[in-house]
Length: 248
Image (cartoon, rainbow, N blue to C red; front, side, top):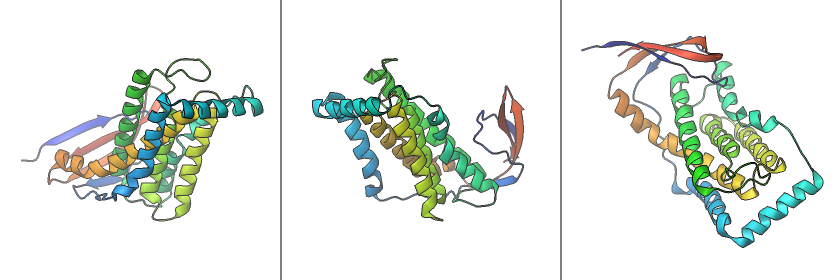
């Protein structure tokens, strides 16, 4: 029996372009089957961060970089990093908007974006509250890991997953923006070097894991059904969003 439904999903984020194009969803999401080696760089980065929490050697290196940054750029201030972390994700939607198609359609890539963001932000929040590491600027004890860096690298890997096969320069640009975000967090004295290394690893691993589990999650939700979805733009509570209307 066919059940009609109309659901509204409001995504309050300026990163998602607004689309009125009907999309057809099915359970044929592209399966991501990475080699185990694909997870090694991220795992090494996260391990480095955890070891640095209790290693005098790594802590001395953190302090050395902190002193160098303050010697050459004392009192450095900028808000660029607050926005640059979103640049790779914005690029995914900008490319889609101008007709450069990635691996997934708009609905799937949006679901992957939200899943990656949830995994990244959730893991970062848990560690920030449990590690109690003081920031270099003494603002609070939420230094480990760097949330800005985790988001930046999660979205850089998101860009790589969608468009890396089309051109290496998409990957270079995304990871370049993420690296710049990490450097700025250190220069601003918001994080130790090991904080941003761990954050980078967590971001990359979160996105890779999102792509790994998404086909199974989608199949669990949709089964073997197809749904005609219409996506319309809305503006509510001071932010853009999407109205998703469809029929199963």
